[in-house]
Image (spheres, rainbow over the protein chains, first blue to last red):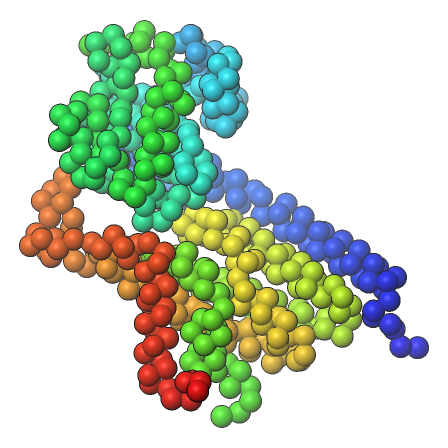
Length: 251
Length: 213
């Protein structure tokens, strides 16, 4: 008997069988590759945190280096009180795994937040406070880490990254020339937290406006990404740390 | 030239998917700003086209013709997700560079075009060669366009600065110190279309049989 491949029954059975096989195959692939992918994400986060204090690592030595230099990780709320002290491994893990997307939403909704803070002691003995950031770019989330000097005011380093900004334009937020601009900028002007503003107009835009303390040059052609990054340095994220930083800041 | 090698070599030049069949233009515009992502994209598309061709070719006698496009789409989508997951697990850095573009392989017309036009009517081995050939032809054009765009748009090739360092913390060096500037237009998608157009022009000028009356 020749099978009629155009009958309705055949078509329905065929699609059901095919979809089931494909779904099972994909589920298997996703589950079996999940641990390797999670490890990559974790390692990358450690590399980013270390990079913000100027330590370059490879994916192989990132974890050891991280454990050596990052001495404290704790979490604060919007009032600046410590909510997770990070005394033991379990608490540290909890801080490391704080859901940044959710906290970003809490900040926008003015709800209570749990925000991570990292502390590094470098080889020269200086103590840096590292604050993770998360915000919105043009196509998807952008994030970063800024490290502050012991005065809790001067930025000593910044690292940014993104999910899918336009290559050559907005994607340039993770390039050296952009990140280097943040070094030496200050977050406070007197008692007021003003953070960092991205000025439009290409290279030298911030200097032309005389805003050398709190201004950086935005990316030409990456206006929305630059605006998103600026918002992340302000209302979208960093201002939620205002009370925590105000308590510590030395002017 | 044997039939099989014609399947493999043909799409590189005389039957190139981008410059002759005018397929896959969309991603040729999107991923050709930098060379590295273009290379990985070319490889990924080649793998997906070849595997998709083989699978569809093996199923070709059993697929109900009324839902064949959906079946093709399902196979391609599954392959793309697998490629994406593997890149994420084993070559995380490159997967990050490509970001959304890997997912966009699904929408690449070359793949659906080859499945529909070739794999449905040919044996698996021939389909495999056809997939490799078309993926290769696509990759070749992508690499040429990306090379030109990265060179003139960002002043580098695969991330290495060739025209010297741009002014920043340190003063500019090389060509930049005598007033050369990157061409911003080259970064934007229209320039990819112009470059592809120039490639088509050159190819037709050299190969008379491609010129239609």
